[in-house]
Amino acid sequence: MTEPTIRTATATDEAAWRQLWAGYLAFYNVDLAPDVTDSTWRRILDPGSPVSMRLAFVDGEAAGFAIHLHHPSTWVQDEDCYLEDLYLDARFRGRGVGRALIDDLIGICKDKGWARLYWHTDEGNATARKLYDSYVKTDGHVRYRMRIGA
Image 1 (cartoon, rainbow, N blue to C red):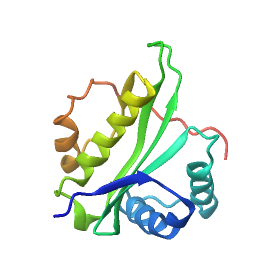
Image 2 (image 1 turned 90 degrees about the vertical axis):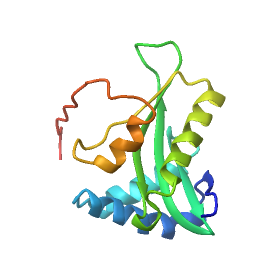
Image 3 (image 1 turned 120 degrees about the horizontal axis):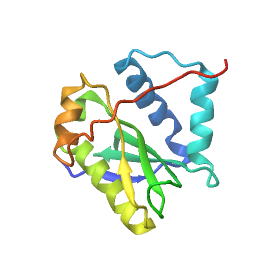
C-alpha cells in the first residue's frame, strides 16, 4: 500500500468529506440534521474556529479523516487537543491509515505545544480500541452526555 498523504482540509475537499462523513454516521447508526453537517463543515474551514480536520489520502483517494479541536484545560497550563472524530473508509482499515492520522495529530500537538491528546470511542468498537490501546490504555473515565436544548 502507498503511504497515506495527510493534510488539512480545504474547500475543495467537501464532496469527499461528505461521503466519508456519511459513512461515519452510518457506522454509528446516527442521523444528523443536514444543518448540523453544514455547520460542522463551516467550522472545519473557519480559520478562527478551534475545530480542524486532517484528511488522509491513499493514491489520491480520500481514505479517512481526523476532526479535532484544541481548548484550554484546568489540569495543565497548555491546551489540550480532543480528537472528536476519527474515521476510515472500510476499504482502508487495517492498512495503517488510522495510525498515520493519529501520529500526524501527535506531531501537530507537539508543534503547537499542546499538553495532551485525548479521545473516546464506543466500548464495543474492538477494531478502534486495538489501535488506541497500542498508544495508551484507557484511563477508566466514563463519559456522561446530557442533551440541553433542542
